[in-house]
Length: 321
Image (cartoon, rainbow, N blue to C red):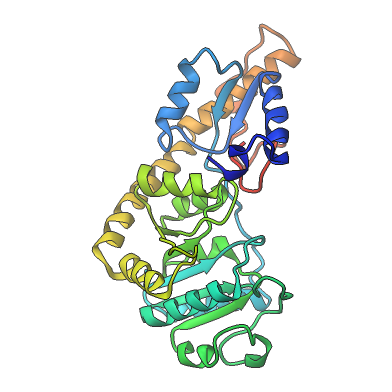
């Protein structure tokens, strides 16, 4: 369970309880997941008397990524083109995730010790402002918070990007073999759709729950271990990266995520369960607002990507509903 929800005095807990009271008001809830991914929760909600509104799994719905592949951020795609299939680790903690200076140093040294290829979207540590895109050959003095000499030592196999990179494009690139991520729900779905296994490094809110699902439930992630000071050490980073990219554990995770990739694609196919679930939700809405006895043909279904609007209440970034 997310840490803020374990403290009844926490303002987040209070707001979440108030929001949960309203969950019984709608006729249905659209959930960005799919039946094969979480069969037990969906079965419990379908059969349980406590779950009043019907829940419709309509995922996995992910961002398609920008069609415009120009600009500094997209230079990393050209860099990926030069590297072997499945051997590059993508490292990113999203727009809201930052690390302490100590933790950032340990991550950098761990990536260096692993000897593996990587793209790292790095943000300045707590108390520092973000900077612009750079690579190992330019603007070396801009990122003084990185360990001294780090960029020069990894320039033949590592690309360091500041603030932003075309995430979906990177995950769908053939050279990408893994993703070190903080485990927001939308990122997990993107990895499943693209068939990329993960190293789970959760930071806050629901990410720890997602990491447990990915590791213990799905078998597509390896979760990092923290020391007694709450820091992920360089040796742990090295071991996780090596295991994912070149180890037996990584091979097994790739097989599992490949299986889920196929199930995700089937769920969103024309006759898939998520497509039919969206059809059922649309039909329910149509009948309520048009004619209680009127039905429409399957050919009129708004399939994912074509539907004009769906209102999804979001409480936390990366949330499922």
